[in-house]
Length: 364
Image (cartoon, rainbow, N blue to C red; front, side, top):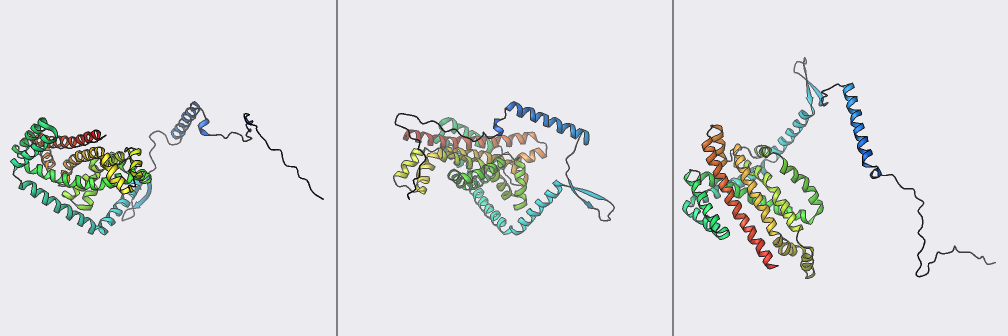
């Protein structure tokens, strides 16, 4: 006997007719975003008032943080001293740094020796050159990128530095800047490229760079002293930490700003990712990258001056001695020499960036 099954009627729609929308049986879910902002503010204010009243009733005004985590007995056991969270954290950091300096001494000594050799050769080369040749060469370079105004200012600035007896400290400062900026660019460019091509790396580096740029500059001298001791390597280490964020950020930004159509066109012609980076993205991002190098150079000059506190030498040493001996005249003269040096370097690097931008706009 055959069994006849009846299928459920299918809902069919004829062309030109609209099917009726199916009604959802799910109840709307409650979300915090659905609460009116006014109610949120009222609840927040009431919560603050309740916490305030409870604290005043239980602990009274002037409530202190519960920072004590332990008590340490004196040698005779008659007195106990409180140990706060800061004391415990500071001891842990001290122990970690002591372990790092003991076990990584070979690395820090190698870096210190390499930096010292580079500084000695650069300083010797700059001081070996006759000052008229240096001033004339700088004026010619200024004329090539900035014409008469920059050439005149550069000549007057370096003659002022020379006649004030600050030529050798200025050469020391230039050597410190050259090594610090070279290392900063060598570190910053690859990290900027990595951040532009890898979103995860960019998310990791961004808070680190924020902390590096907001931390007081004097704090950077501490790890330099701990790892390298007093001297120029410690000053260069602090300068690199202080000056490297701009070149990382602007390299990242410049590569991200390259037109996707240009990258896609290069890819359609069979270019590899490395070829796209080296022959398309970096050349087109060069003005932005050079702006980062300019900012890194200016920050390096500022930090090199502060690094005189750890015996880094240079013009900052003249400023520091003038402050210690209460000689405002010598301090002002050394400060003007630093300003003139900064202005000349800034104008030269900006002129290079401007010429590159004009070349790119002319090519387009």
